[in-house]
Picture 1: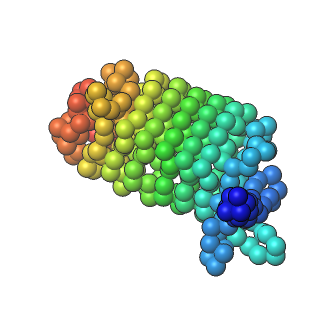
Picture 2: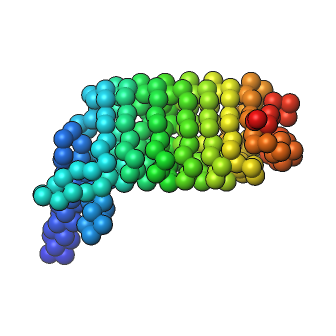
Length: 239
């Protein structure tokens, strides 16, 4: 019994420390990532204070206890299920968007991802059913599994030159997709629909989609899995 009491007390202290690390500045809650580097992430809060927000503007810097901190991350599930969110401004200091950060933000029509962004987590924008287009920044080299899945209104995608892979389900069930522009000279690896995989793209959108690729790259794309997924005649070299 004594061991159980001690263990319970220890867990309480640990959990208490985690809760204490979260603090509020303005409308948002934050967590310190690196005290020495003075960096923070925006985090989910169990009281779900963001649920009724229609507009969110995440600052580049915040001030807490007399110190300035730079915002470089959005934590896992931070804005998940915020289905009233219509306007989102991300800071030019942002490096990472976490797992399910904006999952099911059903009213969000547009997101401008900053050039500083390096990583987008799995399911980060899944079921953002009003999202119409997405321009992936240059530093993002992979689109994780199901990151933009079930984005029903997503019509256009821009992939950067540095993109090397679209993992399984990356744009799955994006039924309105009609235009993909890839700046990658080498075709990014992708998952094809199979018994093992859903596929990076939804199979039923393949015939309606035009893929724009860099000059002198059509043959590479046509001979890769892109040529198996999409109509080769609709793989077009950009001027």
